[in-house]
Image 1 (tube, one colour):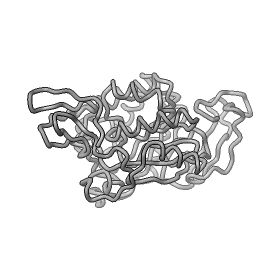
Image 2 (cartoon, rainbow, N blue to C red):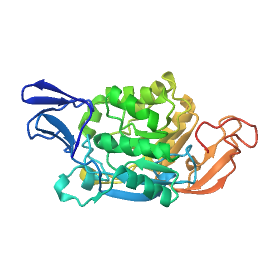
Image 3 (tube, helix red, strand yellow):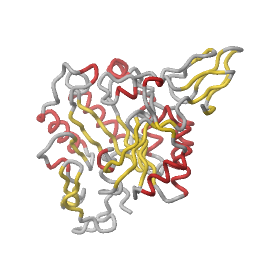
Image 4 (cartoon, rainbow, N blue to C red):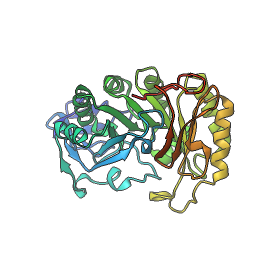
Length: 335
C-alpha cells in the first residue's frame, strides 16, 4: 500500500477522500466508491500502487487518438478499480470487482517505463479502468516517463476534482475523455456520477498544454437522443472545443446492457454529420466499418491526409503537421 494524496481528516474517526467528486467519507477500515482507496490507521492508502492487472501494447488509434503520433504504439496499463459504475462497461471484470479476485503483476514505476522503452513504445497509456483511481501510481510513472522522453496518455471519464487534475496535467501529453452523455439524470443512471464535474474537467484540460480528444458512445435508449447530442455540440462550440477531435463510437452490448442492440449505422452517421454542421472540425465514427469518418481530412481544403482501416493507417501524408496541399496546420501532435 502507498499513502494516497488528496484527503483530509473530518472528524476523529472519519477522513474525506478529495480525489474525485464522490468525496467519500470513510471510517477506519472502509474503502471508497472506487474500492481501491482505504482508510487505515488515520491515513488514506492506495491499494493498487504498483499492481498492474493489464499491460498491453496497443496502436495509439485504439485509445482512440487520431491526432497524436499517428501509427505509433503505446504501452497500455491499468489496475483494478474505478470511480464510475457504468452499466455498459466492457472492462467490468477489472473495473467493478473486488481487488482480491484479480491476478496482478507487481511492477514498480521504473519497470513500467523500462518496458515501454524496451518495446519501443512512444507513449504509455493509462486506460482500461479509470486511471483516476490509481492516481499516485500513474503520476509516478508519468514523471519518470517524461524524463526519459516517453509521452503519457490519459484515457479517462474525467470524474476528478480540479486540483488533482491540474497537478497531473503537466505530465500528460494527450488525453481522450469519455463524455458519456449531456443529461445529468442519464449520467447518474448510466454511470453513477454527475455531468457537471466532467464538463469542468474538460474545460481545464482544453485550457492546458495537453492534447485533447473526446469520445461519445452512442447507446440506444440512453445516449442517442439527437436533441441532447445537439445541446452537447453547441456547448462544445460555445466553450472553445471546435478544434478538438470527437469520436462517436458504436455501442456493442456488454455488461448489464447486453439486452440492447448495437447502435444503428444511420444514427452514427446522423450525429456525425450534425457535429460537422455545428462547426466541429474533426469528427470520427468508431466501431463502424466502410465509412469516411475514420479518415483525417484538412479542415481548410478537405484534402485526405490520413486514411485508416480500423486501427491501421493506410496513408499518412501529413508534412510536419501541415496539409501537403494547402499548408494548413493540422491540430495535434505529430512528432
